[in-house]
Image (cartoon, rainbow, N blue to C red):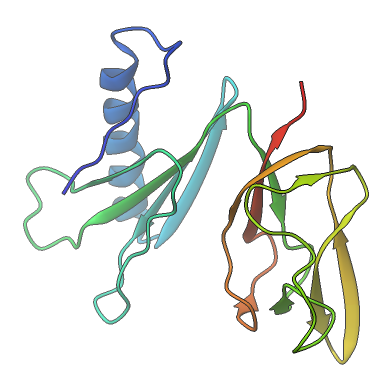
Length: 166
């Protein structure tokens, strides 16, 4: 099922260009045998990820759409995840385990909707028995927490979406 949303400021043909770009990127990913590809251009980031047959695809609560490449019936669906240009992404700087709080009974460092300052601790990533504090790159409001507490994270994986203060 496809979900399309258009930012209020986008031009009428912007959706068509996004769909065309998504199809071209998905075709390239399929041709090269890639399970995931990310492209950034003109302030827009487009991530295409082929869904694994054993793991259900998860689409985050940012503008997203699921599409399949036309003419290739045996190809599994493609999950597309775009991040609006005005949102700052906080990514994992290392591989490890994601923790939202300093301890099992402690309150989370931040919740969705919280306003944070630049340099404020957002979470901890445990890597090789070391606890690494991950800080906000900019002041703003937490739009979305993309990882569950206690889950493993990969280098470069998106952890938080922050809407900057204007």
